[in-house]
Length: 247
Length: 207
Image 1 (cartoon, each protein chain N blue to C red):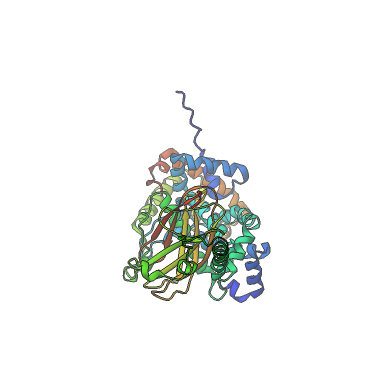
Image 2: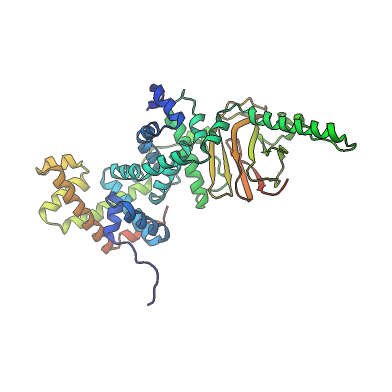
């Protein structure tokens, strides 16, 4: 036999993993093997469940050893991630600012640009975008059963509502406006298609039937299709956008 | 747990992302998040969709990474307990994970949003757990038969009766360290026994 597959994990290794006594790189290596080997993963799962029952707990109740192992294994990574977060300050500033600030800034830029163009060129027949019309709450005229979602592209030059499949350049931010007939207290925006899926739970106070801007902006990176999913209403609301391109 | 409600200085440090504050919050809520993820009650009601033991650690880590992001920290109002806020994030992480693995449809709607169904919830021990307990009793019984008297006593008290290490040490007049060492050896022997008997391979499909 010329079986090139890596050998399965030994009983001893599996036991040490379950007990939490195998640490460091050896542990990471073993876990990596488990993710790619269904047979070993199944044996591991059986041993975990056995261990839980032998510890006097329920089948789906981690033992104290498991809890300690998870706590210890993730602690450094979680704190390092919080410490690193390169976009942290910018995101934090946006998140803590009043929800209307990015829209107001963008509308200001747009208004300034429009006036400049209008004042210097006065080209007949060219109609400038209407910033008030674009950014005013308007959920009622885009009614969907139970709720609606609008996604804004917040690039400095041309802030606008994104229709299904429309493009927004990398570096720009997305903003969101929602309306529900029955207002939920917690929403979440899922943003998928990028390097890693993002999930943003948002606590909101909404007035039923009235559109409101969510206190969240997301900076776009990379390129390609992304999917924005709003969860919290009677049914998920979804919109596809493209990152990259001019408009 | 009302950690961030009772300690306003900690709350401010948490919001500012101070490492000491984040570490305290992490230590305080780590076990609660892991238990929630393992329990698999994401659907509301009695139904469970489980995060596998292998994915548990990853889901736990992802929950805290998201919870400690600046926008999430600042979104916490400091007026309500932090635990439920964190559990909301854990639930999102779990649902994403389950969707990605095809265990949950993308059209899933939480039963938390349909209270009439949630009322049907039951906390009775599920049949799967009952079956597993019966299997374990038989398997451990077979294992005990082949042990020397001293080890059998320890295994009986620890694995069958489910006493703590302290309780086992007291019953056998051993130190806790001695119990821990002997138990470690017994667990490995048990794993070898179960492996040789084919018990480990008889598992259900992976979660």
